[in-house]
Amino acid sequence: MIYPNITIDDIKKKFNLSFSEILQEIMIEKSLNQTALAEKIGVKQSQVSEWLKGKSKPGYDNLRSMCENLGVSAERLLGLDK
Image (cartoon, rainbow, N blue to C red):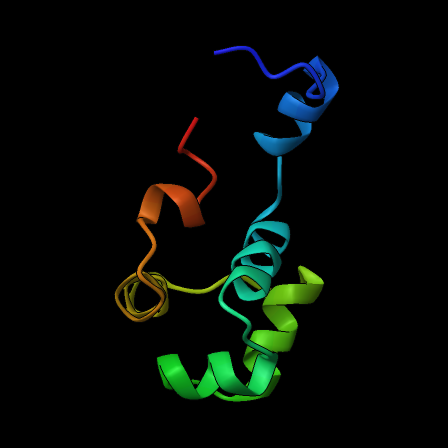
């Protein structure tokens, strides 16, 4: 299938997103703010804020909780779903 409005740069950008950018994208899709995401996965809102700023990254347990509670794959969260 051909997508006439998508450029190579769009594709490169899509597959070179940081964790914080991927998380922001998912939060927008799911209509979640930081507080709602924190409550959903059982962490403090300040922790979500740190992830979104790129100051820290979640550990295994939090990644697993995100996958389960947001209905997304680990590959998507980690930017590996190329």
